[in-house]
Every structure is written in C-alpha cells, then in structure tokens.
Amino acid sequence: MRKFIQERNRSVALNVEKALSRPHFHLDLWFCLTLQNWILDFGRPIVMILLPLEWFPLNKPSAGDYFHMAYNVITPFLMLKLIERSRSAFPRSVVYLCIITFVMGASIHLVGDSINHRLILSGYQLHLSVRENPIIKDLKPASLIDSFELLYYYDEKLGHLMWYIPFFFILFIYFTGCFTEAEQRKQIPTSGWLLLGPSALYYWYLVTEGQITELFLLTFLAMVAMVIYQHCKGLSPDSNGQFLFCSFIATAFLVAVWVVYLWNDPVLRNKYPGILYVPEPWSFYTLHVKDKL
Image (tube, rainbow, N blue to C red; front, side, top):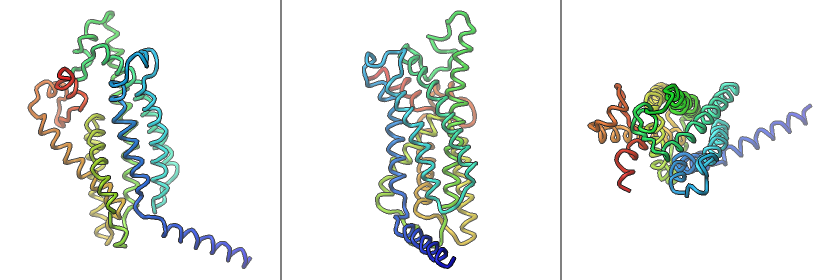
C-alpha cells in the first residue's frame, strides 16, 4: 500500500512538473485557430472565385465546400484542445453538447452556402433580399421563392446561430478559467501580440459576415463583467485571457469603424434595417467592388 501511494505521489509530481514547464501562453493553439480560420473560413469564398469553374462543375462540391468540410472537423478539435488546456474543470456534457451543436450548425451552413455560391455565379446579388433578386423574383411557380427564402433562413439564420452560439460560449467558459494572481502568467509574449491583429480582424469578419453582432456584444459584456468580478477577488486575466479579451476589444473597435464608414449607404441600409446596422462584407463587395474588377 505504501509503495502504491509513493508511486502515485511521484506520478502527480511529474504531472505538476510538466504543467509548470509547459509554456503558459497557448501559442500553438491560438496560432492554429487563427491560421485555419483565415484559410478555411475567410479564404473559402475567395478560393471559389479564383479557381476556374471548369475544375468544379456546379453539380459537384466546390473547392470552398472542401475547405468548409475541413473547417467543420479542425475547429471543434482545436476548441476541445483549448478546453483541455484550461486550469478549470468544466462539465464534459456541456462541452460535448456545444461541440455537437457547433458541428451541426456549421454543416447546415455548408450546404446552404454551397448553393448560395452557385446562385452568385448565376447572377444572385448579395446586397439584395431574396425576393428582390433579379434571378429569383420572376420564378414560376411563385412558391419556389418561398423555398429559396427557406434556404436563406437555414444558411444565414439557423445555421449561423447553431454555429456561433456554442463557438462563443466555449470561448467564454474558457475565459472564465483564465484568471490568476501570478504576475509571470499575465505577460503576453511578443508572438501573442503579433497574433492579436490577425485574430481580431478575423473576429471582425465573423461578426459582420455572420450577422451575429448581438451575440458578440453579449459575450463581450459577459467577459467584461467576469473581469470586474474577478478583480474584486484580487484576480486578473492571465496571458491567454488577456489575448482573448484584447482580441474582442479590437474587434469591437473594427466593427464600430465599419458601421460608421457605411452609415449613409442607402442600398445597404435597405437590406439591413433595424437598430443594429452592421452590413456584411460580401454584400459590400457585390455592391461596390465586384463590377470594378
């Protein structure tokens, strides 16, 4: 029995030593997340535009579809690894449910976005509503228009919500475990500061193109409230928490600049009515950039 206890204590000591020797800032995970977000998510529609149409017939998956499939596998894996690195223990059932919902929502979006890209190649205008689009409004029978509106709902509404709600929820619960008293754990390395810009710029694209401003603001406000609450206990964000928090601050600034820049655009104003006016970058592209290229 004594020998078993000694071996167990030795194993615990080794695990603690490994944890202490491991770099506290998760550069590998943040770098992989940022890189694959830029390539597989932001780069997806660009690849579909640049590659010759003959390589990917309209009745077959496009290069962007394969990018999306890879994103749907790699991103949840990285999110799970991020949770594993947290110093706080979270209910596994909650984490697994979030990942399952994330994959399902991203997969719904994959199908809707794939069809949407083919419509763009046929003349669909992203800055117009479904019923106002020239290739849609004259369809016969008229019930077909309802089917395209259902497709839009699955792609831009339901798919986005099931995709992004668990995404931001996992980031938030990870953030709740990123508080410490140790000063040496609060310093963001130079590599982290270099990664901050690309990370924030991607989140700007995610918020604007995904039309999830409300969800982003709720998550950001929850993070602010958590910082205030932990500060009252004498704790502050470690390097990973600071990296995530600063990324969200920069994202909020970029979204505000984007809104101010397009504040008086009448066409986009018509498509995006309501209190929170945040146009999509690709709508801006089809309206102001596409015809000039």
